[in-house]
Each structure stands twice: as C-alpha cells, then as structure tokens.
Length: 320
Image 1 (cartoon, rainbow, N blue to C red):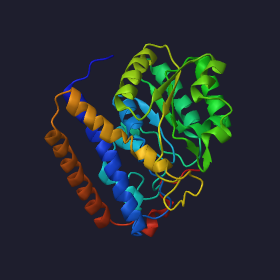
Image 2: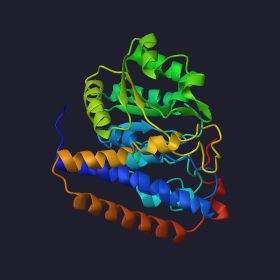
Image 3: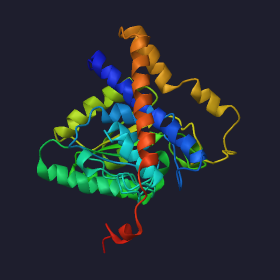
C-alpha cells in the first residue's frame, strides 16, 4: 500500500469533518427556513469524495451530482461561497442563482453539480477529450450514484471514453438507494463494477466507508490514467444516512437500517485508526474539529449578512 504521511492523514480527517459539519449546519439552517429550494445531503459518504479528491490537483476536473456538496468541498471549494449560494445570496458561487444543486468553480476544476441524474458524465467526456488533447496529465472524475448506471448517459459516456481511451475515472458512489428504490430492485447485476467489462475497461470495487482504501486505490488508478491507461470504473460501496432530500420521510427504509450504518461511521472509524496506528493524538483531531467549527461559523455569518441579488441581475449571465 502507498505510504501516507501524518500531515496527509490529518488533511483527510479535516476534509471529512468539514463535509460532515457543513451538511449538518445547512440541514439546521434549512429546517429554520433560511435556505430555499431542495437540499440533498452527503452525510455518510464523506470518505468517498475525500479519498478521491485528495489525489487530484487543481487542474484536474470533476463533475458532480444533486448530492454534490461533499465533492465540491473535497475539491477545495470555499465554504463561505458555497453556503452563500445555498442561501441564494449574490456572494455565492453562482451569484445566488444556482442553489444547492448547481455549485460551479471552473478555476478549481469543478465543472458543476447537476440536478439531472447522470448528466455530469457526458460533460466529463468532453473534459476528457480536452485533457487528452492537452496531453499534460490532466484527469477527469465524474461522480454518480448506482441509480445513474441505468441511465443512457452512463452507457454512452463510458462507451465513448473507452473508444477514445480518455483519462477518465468514473466513480460510482453506491449508497444503496436510487432516490427511494433499494439497489436490489433496480440493479440486475451484483455490482456496478461488473458493467465495466461490457466496455472493455478495468473496474474496481472498494469499501467507500474506508477513506484510506479509497485514497490508496485512487492513487494508483489516477497515476495510470495520467499515463494514458484510462478510462477506469471504480465503485465505492457506501451508505446514505439522510433521505433522498431533506424532509423525505424515508418510509421505504427497513427499521434499524440507518442506526446500523451509523455504527460504522466512516469518520469515527478513521479517527480511531489514525490515533491507534499513526501516533496522531486525539487532541490533534479535536483541534481540527474546532478549526472547522470556526470556519463554518464564519461561513454562516457571511451568508446571513450577504445581500440577495437585485432584480436587475435577472438577465445577467443568461446565454442564448
């Protein structure tokens, strides 16, 4: 397994804590009526975005989903601008016009979260063509759920990426549900990873609740993609603690399922691992948690105090 420094481990922990803290914070603000529209939370899946994006550089591209806050934070997005966008404020990433499902920062390689299931994959193929043309080692990572593998976008995108041999790593976050439907009801195969064989691409299945397994697996695959060996398909088995959207009554879930998943909290398990095996103190982790709380306090204050877009901005940034 690849070596990893204590500093890198603490960065991974900080990213996971920041994603969890952001989601818990905006959930409360949403329930207080301060965030409009829909909210789809990433709680429980933090190890995937963290382990993947820790291996990416600023010039690498990602495409995201309607459940995309974690991907954007892991790729380096500013939580102030992210939260302001969710508030609908003009200081947000899309000037308050995109909201929760449409955070974009091209300068960071974030080509956009997307409210349409699977729609980030064709965008990733376009970015992959650019990366291959530039020939400077860029890679592209589209994130999507297992439900999206039943959408035409998935099959068309993987097929074209395979034909053109693009530097793309398709990352499927198998969180056990496609909206309200459990995976065994909509997947005719045991794993999404099996589907890569139909397109002649190498595929992997990893424990998406183990940030180190995700990190080390992606480290190897991304290096290979940079060397021109792509594309690849990686399925990360994980769990979605929240409903499909905030306010979802989740009547479709078996009794006790969420509690069972929470007992294998990816953040708690990672914290136990690094304090036991890497000589990192619990106090150091506590310091990280405190810094993240302060950062989120500042993000909330910034978002509350920012202005809404004025009516004259309605026709700005509109393309035809």
